[in-house]
Length: 461
Image (tube, rainbow, N blue to C red):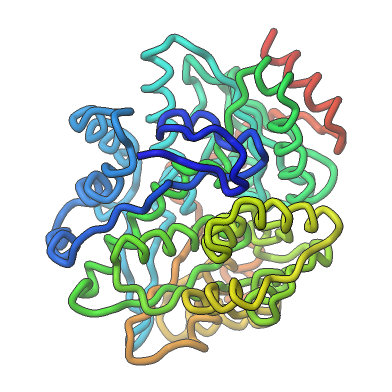
């Protein structure tokens, strides 16, 4: 299995190299040269298996010789052992033909744990074989950072730096990043919004002297291994509802497009997915792009669903790559236009995207109303991101079972839930003392040179 860049001008890599590299040297994102498919019988055979065994069967064709079979099974076991539910990703029924996929039973209570726990295990295993040390720099709109802290803290071969937008994440999200005590992990509260944080990370990857000097690696959803790990729960949930004997649909609250792109990969692998519905909050650039063909950034307006407060959705580039017939030069041109504010998707590419994706938008008022309504109707308490998904999913319900991804535990956003239902959701027992822990963070400006200097200093200390 080989991996190529969406912009067509970077070296072709194997899985292990692509995982460690993260962002391609031409600024693009790595994708598989070909997508392995699973037969009808192979998908049917997943029924009744453990989550770990489903993960092994879905992911194994992508790994090449990076890990042996027994080794990879051991990494999967270690990655998912800390989860608080034996099913890892259980389904809850909300109503006729509508199901909620609970992705918040990991150690940091968000869907990012599914990928981050595993990529932490895989990176550490790969580095142990070479004795090398890497520097991971990531940007977060809330959940990626805490998941990365949990996955990489204390690891011998990794220094981790997470940039998050100062004042734009929830208190729980912030504390999950800033209360880690291990010396190899660092939380940077940066001036600006998530797009600014993401841009500085990409700038570091594109500064090859810095990149090579600190052995830079990335764990944002620009990293293919992150996307691949998320493909698994599309298979596990769909099979639970009768796939491949019947089709299913998914609604995904998304900002950076990584989670729903994993669903796109599952569909290309042969999983019978009828619709992939993009759910956005009022920062609705993805909804506008699918409905109008115009991908134009309008600036980020803070919301009660901060993990979706994004205008530059990095993984959308992967979808555009396929929509443009895997033409790297065309994608590179679009990304150049994006630097000036946006681009228009060609008619052929837009039709290709619409053949797979639908979309919808949820306002702040609708988010609060959805949290309240579902609590009254079902007793289910939704986080604001999950509520965005449920509201949009309701607009697409039909004869095909709909699975909405519940991406975070409601206790990560207690103020939004309190406003909606009059009750503050409690953190699970393992995090009950979170607000008693001492915070450790560094306030930083939106300045590439200063960030690079700080990273060099911390690595050397």
